[in-house]
Length: 285
Image (cartoon, rainbow, N blue to C red; front, side, top):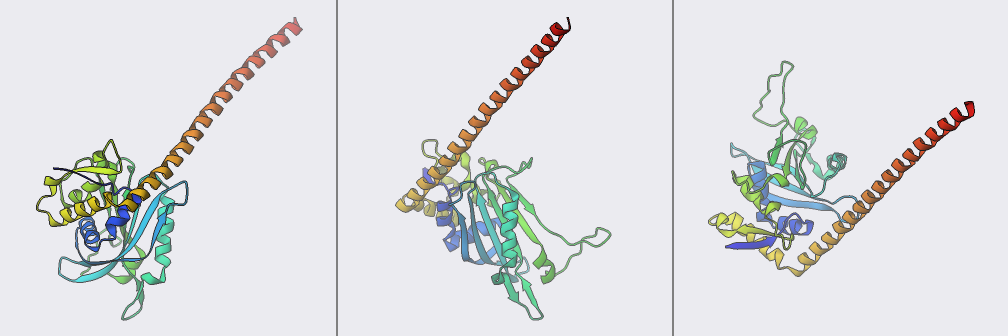
């Protein structure tokens, strides 16, 4: 059976989705490839809908994860989503803000240290020539000779100064369901967006049969699709980006006109130069 769920690429739908603690744990567990025991959305969420040059949605999470040895530890997850191409500098500026926040500093038995941080980027565009939908960038520790230094316990000093990153290229999902993460991310697959209404995603209910967590996500997205406030906010986002597209189109058309005019002026200049040379030759004769 085909279901038409709300498209989570929209900020308002994504927010509606991640506000549910169970869904947040499901998605973050799949991304981290570790069990997220507890997750708490931290104040504040940073939503950029007022600027006309970029859309970037950000949420901070405090997540308690269970390691392979059964031990639990608290980490900070900075999740940033954008569906248009943007500058990496904006991401860096946001991370710098998080490094400076006092809320991310914890009191240890010996001294203060920052929570370990993982940056997650959900991108509506591709990054360079990477051909896989999900990229993991993990920091490791080495000695002078290039040998990896392994420690049973993560060091707070090292963890405070470096962070891991997970980059999701949504355009590369395209029906890929080869593992748990790709199955979870399949609800973001824009190749399944309805042609009649891009605010909805078409999914096959049988694909997720028997998976309680995914069935729960589908239920939440079905609820979003029928929620009048969510639909209205999606319309606002469409209007917002339509205005940006119209502006960019007008700029491109203007640039093309200017380019043509410049070419004509160059041609006219060359003609005048040639006429000037002819007149000089005639004068000499």
